[in-house]
Length: 132
Image (cartoon, rainbow, N blue to C red; front, side, top):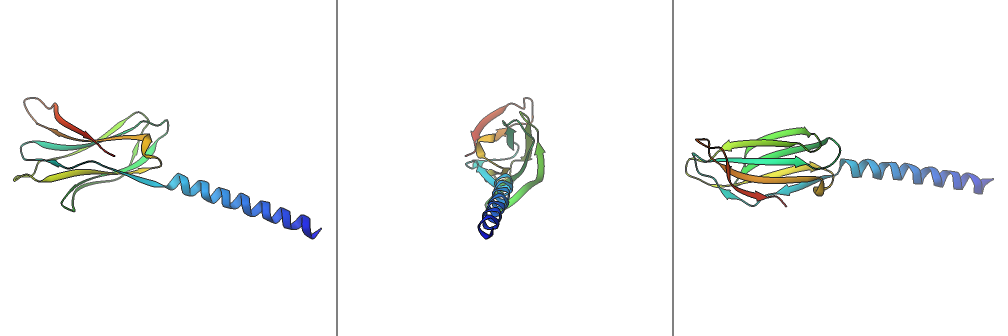
């Protein structure tokens, strides 16, 4: 009888541990970071993050120069197959700027990029680099 209770208790402990590990893996955060670009006003700098998975995902986008956070999106929900876009104006004297994406789950669920673009007359991106 004691042996039977021991096995039941052991199975119960294993099940609880498995649930805790599953929850932890769902809450795991990853980071994607782009190389720096030199952004000079009047050009603009953007960070784009696309969720290529099949579920809504939580992400945070930061635009950073020399350790200073220029923009922080806070946590945002990114729908499947949708892109979020955050941008700033280039620095008056120019400077190195990069994107930091903190994402929920696996990095391969996302595509991140840093972009330089102009306001007018055409807002087409003229430089795009991907995050790793």
